[in-house]
Image 1 (cartoon, helix red, strand yellow):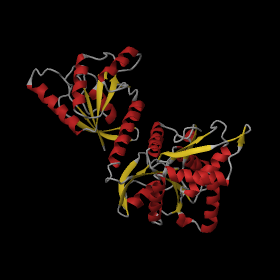
Image 2: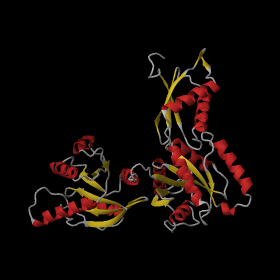
Image 3: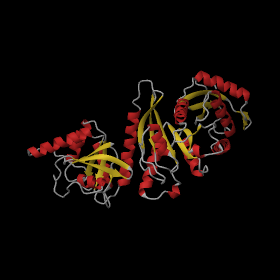
Image 4: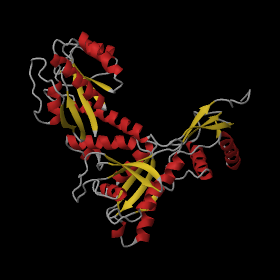
Length: 447
């Protein structure tokens, strides 16, 4: 669980924020500075985001007594334990010399810091917020802990940090090994949490017949064939127009973040229900983000006509998601553990394709054959020339082709090249990107 330390000079509202995030009055608050002296721990949350937090004594520069010095030491220990520090300032007072002094102290501690401007209810002088940049912690989050204002932005900033921290941890794989990150997505009640439990081999998440049981994104580490991977269960995604209430909105936001930071997304479909527009919308979102997509058709044990059902869903997917041919389609039963190994194997295979690197020589030999097999069309009385090609990135594979005319390049010929490239290098089932650039061959003197 994420650990957060709330830090700042006296009387900026640290304990008030602590109580607000805890959902109850645990810390004594007051207008007199120095009310809090010890570290005070509690579980906190904003929407579906849960964390462990610690309230600290107000930071003072001069130790007039032994208590002040000990309180400062307690704050230092809280900071050392924390993953993230919320550095509070008073938005009405602006930046004080004490704020600047302890900003410098925080930088030396090598801990991530999120600047929070509290007491920002009503109109705040924009100059005060602009002045906060001198502290060196970027744009502050403006809140009112007393009135509960600005918590959504605070959630987004903390959640963004948590996601990045999780990715940094997950990417600490053995040298030369790429750690697979999987996100399970789908409509509510399609069996996502049951699938996570089947992969984990234990009841890691609560499941039930009622839709919306999962609200937070739950992450676990697992292993398949000696290879480690990270997998995240997410809240079900309904149509945007049907999302109601703050909890569901923040859960949906968290799900979208998990998709964005995944390598492979498993889209779980319910075999007992028709393939709906929302299923296809989620799949399209995953492909637009450039993530690798594997489709798991769950509750397969409840279907009698396997052959007919399989043919129908393959046809629907091919027609509706024409931008990617031959998507990996695995028929499973998460409840009884059917084909779970097959599903994870498909995720690893798709992940390898998603990381494919093709040499420039191979690409240009293929390009020459593709052009010879299907001559580029004429545009404005001139035939388009494809001069040179190279790969620019992986995850997903992206390429650039230098052409004589990029502005009027026919979409149909670009589709031909994309399909031919996927077939040649066995990249079917993933998104690839081909960009066109008007330029001469960089290895020749003339175009």
